[in-house]
Amino acid sequence: MQFALTEEQTVLQQTASAFVDRYCPAALAKTWDETNHFPADLWQRMADLGWFSLPYPLDWGGGGGSPLEICIIAEALAHSSLDVAMAYVGTFIPGLVIYRHGTDEQRERFKPGLLEGAYRIAVAISEPDAGSDAAALRCSAVDAGDRFIVNGQKAWCTGAGLPGALIAAYVRTDPDAPKHRGISLLLIPGDAQGVQIRRTPTLARHLLGTNEVFFDDVEVPRENLVGALHGGFSLLMSGLDMEKTVMAAAYTGVAQSTLDEMLAYSKERRQFDRPIGNFQALAHPMADLQTEIDAARLLAYRAAWMISSQQPCTREASMAKLKGSETYVAAARLGMQVLAGHGFSTESVMSFRWRESIVATISGGTSQIQRNAVAKSMGLITY
Ligand SMILES: Cc1cc2nc3c(=O)[nH]c(=O)nc-3n(C[C@H](O)[C@H](O)[C@H](O)COP(=O)(O)OP(=O)(O)OC[C@H]3O[C@@H](n4cnc5c(N)ncnc54)[C@H](O)[C@@H]3O)c2cc1C
Image (cartoon, rainbow, N blue to C red):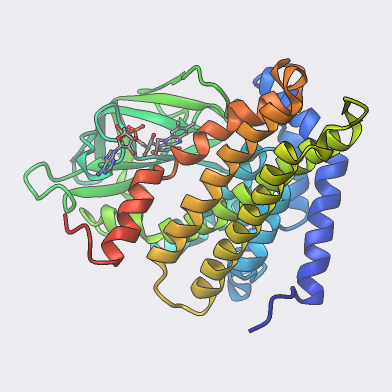
C-alpha cells in the first residue's frame, strides 16, 4: 500500500491549484454566486486544458485519466467553490453515460461536444414528487415511432438554463411496468419547442442555477433515446458510484479550504492578548476537523482506486460521499463560529461557504440515502 501521488498526479494537482488561484479564487466565486454569473470563459479554460476529455479513454480521443486524477481536479476546483467543481463534474458524468450506453451514431454525433466540453448536460431525474425515490418519476414520453412526445415536469435540474444546455431527461415510457422498469433516457435540447425552464431561487448553486423544467408536447427524435427503451433506470444508476466518489473529493477540497480560511483568521485575530487559535476551545475543534478531512479524503481516494481496479464499490462510494459532505457542513459551521461576527457578515467568504455547504448533504443523494446504502451492504436494511 502506498499513499503518495505519482509525479504526474502531483503536477496535475499543482496545475489545478494554480488554476484556481489565478482564475477563480473563492472571493471571485462568491461574487459570481451573488450575481448569478456563469463564467463561460472559465469553462473554456478548463476545456483548453483538456480536463473535459480526461475521463474518456485514449482510443476515443479522450485523455485516459484515472478516477483518481479526476478526483484530484475536482478536489482542487472545489477550493474555489462547490459550484465551480460541480460545473466540471456535472458535465462529464452524464457524458460518460452517453459514451458507455449510446449507439455508435450517438457517440460520433456527441463526441466533439463531449470531448471539448461544449455541452452543459443537465441531468433531469428529480420531479416534485420524486426525490430520493427517483424511480417514482412520472414525466411521460409516448412512443410515436420515429419520435417520442414528452409531457411533464422536472425539478432541480442543475444547469438546464445555461446556453447550449442538453437535458438528459429520465422519463416514463411504460406506465404499466414496475416502477424501475418503465424508464428511458432521452436527450432533449434546452431550447427545443415546448420546453420551458424556470430558475428556482436557492441559497446557493447560483453559477449553474437549478431549475424547474416543463415539457409540453415536446417532440424528441428517436435517435435521441440513449440505451434500451425502458432500460433507463440502470443507466441512471450506472454512473452513481463515480459521481459520489468525485463529488466526495470535491467536498474534501472545499472543506480543506474552509479550514484553511479559519486557520488563517484564528492566527491573525487577537483577543485577550493572544491569537484566538491559541485558545484550546478553538484549537481542538480545528484539529478534529483536519482529522475528519483527512479521513474523508482517504475514503474518496479509496473509492477512486476501487473504480480504477473495477471492483464493486457502492458501499465505499456512499461512505465517501457521506463523510465528505457531512465534513464540509461541519467545517462551514465551525468556520462561522471561529470567525464569529466577521463570518456573519455576508461580505465574508465564510458566509458563502456556510450557505453553499447545505446542499452537499442533499443533492446527489441525501446523507440518509447514503447511510441506507451502507446499511444495506451490512445486511441491515432490506427494503
Ligand atoms: C441545489 C440542488 C441541485 C440539484 N440538482 C439536481 C439535478 O441536476 N438533477 C436532478 O435530477 N436532481 C437534482 N437535485 C435533486 C436532489 O437529487 C434531491 O433534492 C435529493 O435526491 C433529495 O430529494 P428531495 O429533495 O425531494 O427530498 P426527499 O426525497 O423528499 O427527502 C426528504 C427527507 O426525507 C429523507 N428520506 C427520504 N427517503 C428516505 C429513506 N428511504 N430513508 C431515510 N430517509 C429518507 C431524506 O434524506 C430527506 O431528509 C438537486 C437538488 C438541489 C437542492
